[in-house]
Length: 165
Image (cartoon, rainbow, N blue to C red; front, side, top):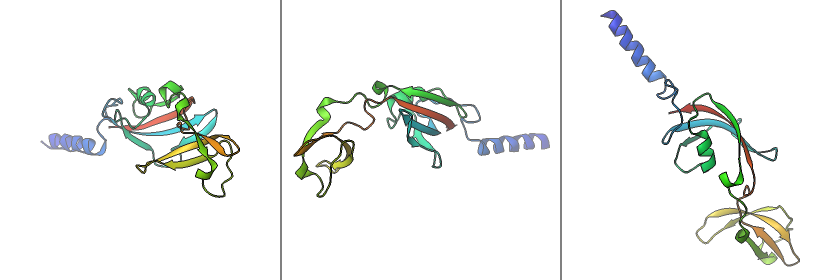
């Protein structure tokens, strides 16, 4: 009887203290709650990282990650590490020529000296904020690029899966 109680106590301890999924080596699948560390680089330049921050937490298949990234993470388990690249078509796509617009200098903030590559934040009539980049400076206007800043770029990821539940 004592052995049976001790076995039950040990099983209850294991079930409470070891997160479900991790104990069984659960693989990432649709609906999995995942925690991971990552670094994102483009052309050898660090763009973003979880280093020194909280890990990235998401639910597989919820649409909050790039589809190409979601696909690469499918099937991985806690403890797995991977390095891979996402081509533009797997990430933010190629730049859309229709997303370039000519904007009068009078529409820019006062006293601003526009330069090619300068990033600005715009706001649409619904209050959504979006980034834009100055692609060209003309005498009385600038050519604004409203594509995602990473459109047309190959993204290099290094990831380490921390947990899968």
